[in-house]
Length: 229
Image (spheres, rainbow, N blue to C red):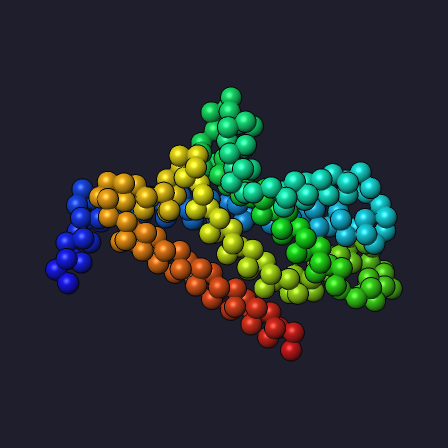
């Protein structure tokens, strides 16, 4: 027990090394939140374009561009995308690393959100579209008031899983020199040469974040199901 207390003091208390963890946690939460917003915006836009093309045959050029985007984002590693955006796209621009990170993760997440949402839209029975049209609604109104609410309920579990994956993927932000949660623990490990407690602390914090997100998604699902009754 005395050895554990001494190890804890060495890794977190001495010289205020716990601040590396707190700074990394703050950056991880900021990146995750902003990346989720970017991913949702891109994903819903791409999903609507692709589902519109699938149902009506319109927007062929936009659909082709969306397919290229999806192929590239889903076919290449997230880490490579992050490095390309940092070292190539933003190489000559003085952009904060946290901006580079949430843009990269948001673009990557948007591709997966798009396919999740599109599958939800396509799963809605065609009779729902016909019912909307019979009520005098145009295509946009039918999508907004009838189709999208049903699609959102259908894909909510899959979206929750994607957000959890996104949260854990931010652990590679250290590759561009950004102090995220994982990199904060790695800094402490490099100073103290004691890997167990810093890595264990990082793992526990990620576990708590994932459990909290899973709980919130579960509450939202139950509330939506209750509203259906």
